Length: 218
Image (cartoon, rainbow, N blue to C red):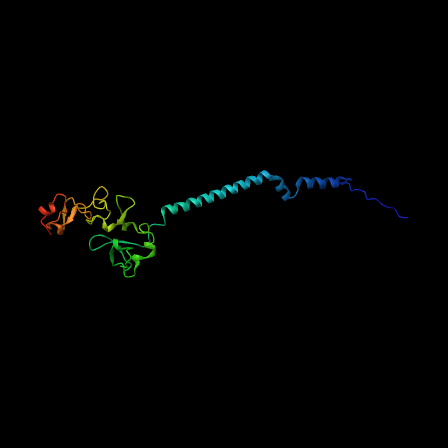
């Protein structure tokens, strides 16, 4: 009858010691996921959610502010490529794409194609007048809500309706030209000068009647 032998523990391992070491290693190290889960409490997740919400709110607020700014200021107000020139009447003009034709500023976006290729009536140029016009084509009146074309300044005509395009302090214009008579006009169309063609016509155009008694005529 054979002997039922029993294994003797090795010299370095004693009964129960192996299990204890394994348990201690398992408890001490743990898995990475279990450590991360234990390190991040529900309060940690709450903080992360609050930070994400704050970032999204900031982003949406910035976008809303940009949209509001565009709505207030309007679309970009300058058309790239537009160039100024001087007309034969020594007035500010718009240079056509042929680089030789200079049309008066007031002929831009008037519904009539004056340039050979119609660039003076392009949608990008005329979509939101005066904001879409180049700055050299626009002049402002005494009333900030009113504007005129730059070639209408100092032309002797009351284009703004309050003569601010002809008189200081808004505008500084040269004295009346040779075809004009200096006087305080009684005609709404004129400001400080009237055409000499109106002199000596037996109709009062100056408040001092100088157009009938002093003006030499045309």
